[in-house]
Amino acid sequence: MKMGQCLNFSPISIRYFGLIAWPILVCSTLLTCFIGILHYDTCTSYSIVLLLLTIHFECLILALVKQLTSIVGGSCIGYALVAPAFESRDNGLFSNSRNVQILSQQEAYDSSQRCTNILNGLERFMANNLIDIFACDYSSTGIPMNFVDTKLKTFFARRTNDGRHYDTYFFYFSGPTCDNGDIILSDNQKITLNLLFQWWCENESSLTSRLILVFDTFNSHKWLKQIRCQTFNNSCKPSVFVILQTFNRQKKMPKLIELGQVHLGIFTEIWLKLNMVDETSTTNHDSNASWRANHLEPKCSFSYYYPEFNFRQPSSADVDIYLNEHSFLQRLHLIYHLLTYIPSLFIYPFLYIFNCIKRWRFHLLAPRVVDTYHGFKLFVR
Image (tube, rainbow, N blue to C red; front, side, top):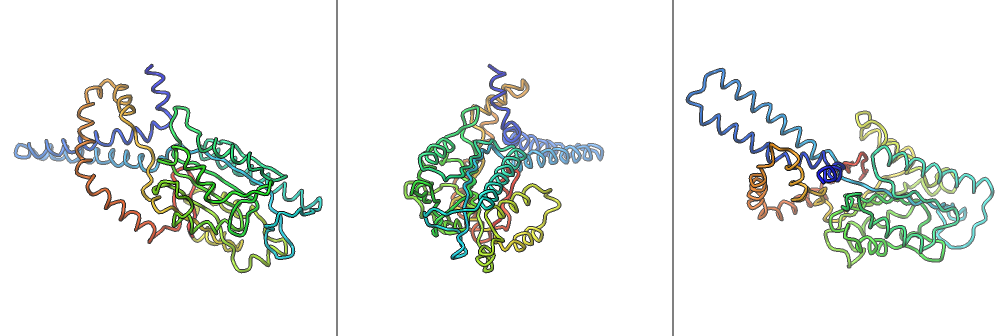
C-alpha cells in the first residue's frame, strides 16, 4: 500500500515536496533565531559566528525550496487539431465560403506538407516539454461536428493516472475560420466561442484547471476581446481560467497572401522556434524581430480572473502520505497542520484585496512574455 501511494505521488513529488516542506523549514529557521536570541547573553564570538552560519544555510535551503515551488509546473495535457485552409485569390484572404474549391495537385501537396510539418513540430514540442499528448489529428477533407464534439469532450474530461484533473489543458488549432473567428467545419456547421466554452465548463476540470488555446488562423484575433471581457458563455463560472494565443495581420499581410507568400503555419513555426530555443539566447528584441520579419503581430488574451490561477496544492491526504513516508516526520502531523492553519486565519481577510490588486496589476501592466511553467511561453505583444 505504501509503495502504491508513493507511485501515485511521484508525478508531482518535486513541487509537492517544496510546498509541504516549506512551513517546516520556516518554523525551523524561526526557532533557530529564537534560540539564538535567548542565549545571546552567554554567547561567545565563536557561537555567534556558528549561529549566523546556521541561519545563512537555512535561508539558502528556504530559497531553494521556494524556487522549486515556483518554477516547477504542474501536469499538462495537449491536443492538436489541424485542417487545411486555402487562399481565395479574389480577395486575398482565406476563403470563408463553403463552396468547393478546385486545387491543383501542387497546391494540395503543399497544403498537406504544411499540415504534416505543423503536427510533427507540435509532437516534438510537447514531448520536449513533458506534456502528455492526448492526440494530434489531421483531416484533409474537413472536420465533422460529431468528431470534434466527441474528441474535445473526451479531452477536457481526461485525468492523470492518479485520478486528478490536469492543471493545464493545451489545445492547438489550425484551419479555416469565419470572419468573426468561428471555426468552419465540413458539415455546414461551425464552432463558436460560446460552444467551445460550453464544452469546457461542462467538466469539473474548469473549476481549478486552465485552458490554453493556441490558434493559428487569420481570424481568431476576433475572439480576444470576448475572452478578455468574458462575454462568451453565461453558463461558465466567473473565475474560469482561459488564455488565447494567436496573431494579428499587419497591413501588408493581405497583399502578401494574394501573392501566395504567406500561409497558415508561419505563426506556428515562429512560436515553436521561440519556445524551443535556449532561454538564455532569446531576448525580447529577437522575438520581436522574428514577428516583424514575417509581418505578424502576436496577440494573447486572458480571462479576467486568470491572474488568480495557481497550480493544484497538496491535499491533506498528500501531506499525510509524505509525513508517513519519513519516520522522523511522523510525529509532526499536528505541528504541520497548526503551521498551515494558523497563518491562513490572518491571511484570509486580506486575500480578496490581494487578488483584486493582483488582477488589476496583471491586466494594466501585462508583461510582454508570460511563462506557463510548462517549458513554453506565451507572447502577449
